[in-house]
Length: 420
Image 1 (tube, rainbow, N blue to C red):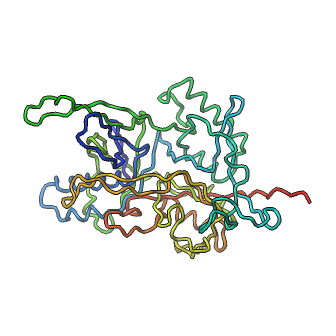
Image 2: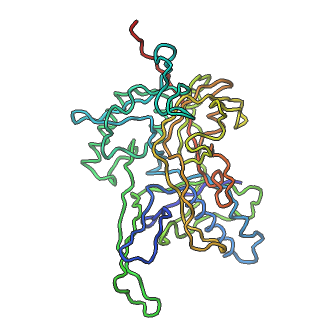
């Protein structure tokens, strides 16, 4: 049995990054820029376990049962609209005071077009190789300041289906920037196409003497937290499996979330099918030869940026049992995303976890379909985990919601003609 949870942060949330935080005067506890899947999944499991213990009578389930629940999320929701990380194949720059969006698309250069010299940075063993297709012209412009960090589901569908031109996207971006300048986010319209990065709030604290409950001298420290706008929630889906006794009654709980035990409200909501693959995506990918995969949450891959379900030839062998096989052609991946945290287990209490390098949300992978119908892949794997299985004892990435993927069509462009 599955349930959808809606998390409403009541305070600024601190998502610890695992950097050392000792009793040093002036030290700062930093926060990550997003709610990580592992932090949200751990909070939900703890909340459900405490809820089970608080019920009258003896609980029939052990706490170990809740530690293994599959959690899918987080997905951001603002004013009844879902939002995802901006796709990295959107190059946003400014010229003459006007913002523009340019599509980053790899181009197949064959034969004399590249002289068989390879392209810098695409080799698996060396720097130069011609295995992948290069995105010609990408990176020629300097990125704009205060670019949007998130895009609405409606606009993401337009991006993935390729039904909107660069000129229309540029006008939309300029209008959004003007609205942000003239009006605060709280006054934005119901269907704002973009959202900015979350504001970071810094607070100064002082250490307290546990004996006298007074402030210690020269023991100031500061913390960073993420401030979420009003009407903002985080959604997650819980799979209880066959043990339906652990999900009896409607969930409505207050529970701390993140560092410094900031409060959030967890409530159960009805499934409104907003997580299902849109019909427009399935229609556009029907029989498509080239597709894109966009990460909605950070992903763990054993080979770094390269998924483990790709072989040495960068091909798949039907990893998701839907009859579709792919060939990787290019990937737009920014700097790795650090994910760490703190251990609260009895065996290793209050110790920082090792930093792990994740592929950030918004990363885009370009594939050529070599077998099967791409629409079947979109239908089966929309917002499903594509992370590799992690053999480390303390990490369960697929169960925590890492690597949730969005799928879309890739409108391949013709390679430029060379002068003979």
